[in-house]
Structures are given as C-alpha cells and as structure tokens.
Image (cartoon, rainbow, N blue to C red; front, side):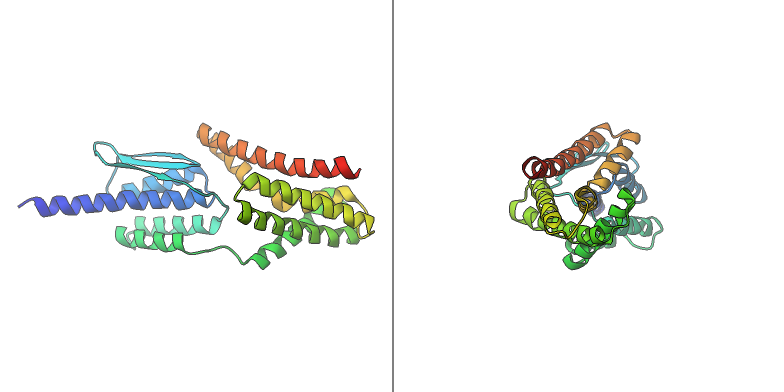
Length: 259
C-alpha cells in the first residue's frame, strides 16, 4: 500500500541530486566563484524541500549529499573556461524555480539544454575583441598615443589570441598554449620593430599580452579566499600564477635571444 509514495519520493530525491550536481558542474566549468556555486545549490535544495543538504566544491570535483540519507554523489569537473553567460542563465533558472515559475523536472531539463548548448561568441568576434582590448589597453598602460603602435599592437594581440586558441585545441595543455602564444607575440613584436611597423617594443608587448592575462581566475581566487574557501582560492591563485609564469617565460625568451 505504501510502495508508490516511497518510489515517487526516491525518484524526486534522485532528480534533485542530479539537478544540484548538474547546476554546480555547469557553474564551475563556466568560471563561477565557489561561494556562488554552493549558494545556488543550497537554494535549489531548500526550495525543493531539502533543508539539510551537504555540499563540497573544488575546481576539479563536486560533492553533494543529504544528511540522514544513504545516497550521495560526486561529479568530476573535466574542463574550466570563462563563460559568464552560462552562469547568469543558471542563476536565472534558480530564481525562477524559487519563485515557483518552473518545477524541478523543468529546471533539470533547462539545465541540460544550457549544458549542451555552445554559448560562446564566434571566433572572429572573439578575435576582434582581442584586437580592441590589446590596442586600447596599450594606450591606457603606456600613456602614449602612437597610432603606429596602436594598430600593430591590436593585430599582434589578435594573432596571439588565435595562437592560444588553436594550440590549446591541438595540445589540450593549458600552460603550453599560453607559453607558445606569448612567444608568438614576442616574435611578432620583434618583426614589427625591425620592419619599422611599430616604434616601442615594450608598449606593443604590454597591450598584446592583455588578452592572455588571467584576470578573471585571479579575481575569483581572491573572492573565494575572502569567502573562506581557502583550498579553492589557493588552487585558483596557483593556476593564475602558473599562467602568468608561462606568459612571462615566452616573452623572456624573446628578450634573451633578440635583445
């Protein structure tokens, strides 16, 4: 007589656990702060009627369980990028679920759609953005309005971004792609100066390297440290430092062999 309610309860509990894990994985893979991940998962669990959830997050794994329940799951994080649009969409779904506009099943379905969709801007638009960032930040940091350097810095910054993009696809080694991209920027900067296409090598490098600088990971690491996530904050800070070291090594080799 009591079997159907138990089965329904078990199904809903499994659906809730999978929904929370899917939420956390999407947010972590998209570059969200860990405190935001835990807060979002907690809100989904609370709004689903579970007040005693247990969550543990790291950049490489996510654990979710419920106190008093024998079931808990671990979800592995295989990749990490910066896609704040996905983070915003997940937060919007969480708010709609809290407001009662959608149910748990619809929330899970919408999360799967977000996970499967590619929400990145096209490569040509990313490259244009890298060109604009490189050229404008060169002027901002150097304080010099040299239009020759302005143009060539943007072009070299775009080439460095493309080099990082394609090398990362071919090798799947994050720090190697950033090292080779920085090396490419350094070599192109030397060629630009030798061909008299630019006037100040230092200014060109300052601007062209900006698209490679790990600004978001470093900011998130500091925010996680302030929120008390010491392990996550430290891991992300180390990752940002290693990225900066890879970029610096690539530029340093150019100084070593060309100057």
